[in-house]
Length: 497
Image (tube, rainbow, N blue to C red; front, side, top):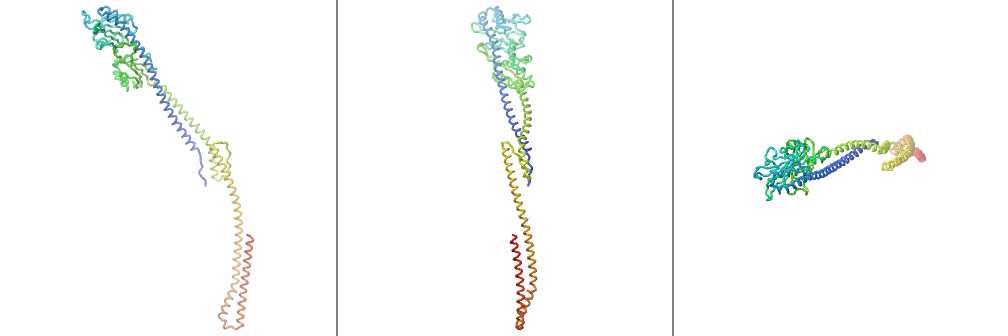
């Protein structure tokens, strides 16, 4: 029986595919875990850097605010002692502007008829670019009475020091924020307001100098949602982040703005102009050196990164790693295919040898091997099996030859026996034919004697008896001869055996 011929090419291909699939799965899991952990690490690093940048920026801005507050409060203490001397107000305003490099203007305004001969009285001293950055003194502010301006109304209404939100339409010299301090007389009566102007551009230089990344920027929001600092001046015209959301749109901007205005610390993702961004924010916390007798600022500082600035290199690296991994997998597949086929080559040779043995080619010699692995053990076992089968086949061949010779002897003996049997049969037939006539004559004589013995005389009777005796002896002699011949033939057959 011949079995189907076995090959390991299909098995080696399946083994290569299984190994490659396992490697691909392991690689994908590894790359996925690496990507996730790298993404988390980059996000944590960006959060850490943003928090450090926020803290540093808050500290720098707060130093400016503290300088302005201290310069103002120092003059305020002397001003309260000379409220009746309205001519000194110009001096106080000038001193405040000159005392701090961050102050560009100072206004002192009193409530109506604080001075009985004047319904409204204010003094405003500011640096004028048209006058070569020299001080200019005025007695009015803008086209409206000062009693309608925020810098006057807020401290008069709240009764405590505060910082105003940026209001560009109220300033000719650019966008400013004002530190406003209510003026109390010796009787603790609120009589007026002392306001100093700090240009937003000055704060912008500090905040925007903390550039988080190549395309990132920082923003400073006031408590009402208006921008104090923003890298794009055109956004100041929107006045608030809510108007910016309506103008620009984008998913997530409102959530980020609400979190900032709520005084939270954290980060949010949002979309703007079709790009993905991430904002890290924290509330603007004042230092211990700040004026404690003032309203909480409620500002929030945020640093905004484009998503590509945080994860761009990482994403590009993932693509590069994937390309390298694919190339590596192809090379690995080819090398694995070659290595597996090389490792299975001795097994293929063994399969060929077994196939030849199944095909009755048992005399083919299985070559020796030096391999010490499982294939080497299998090779030795097949070699021993081949030798054992070859020895057994040799024994079977010898026994078959002996059996064939014996069969030939038996065949010849059978032919001789058959010839002897034929001779015996022929002889017996011949002798039987020879005894037929005497037997028939004997039978007739006996029958005649039995039937007519009363009518026969003694001579005829004796003659008949002698005839019967003669015939009987003839038949007995023939039988004796036949027996002798048969015994002689059997004796010869016994001798031949």
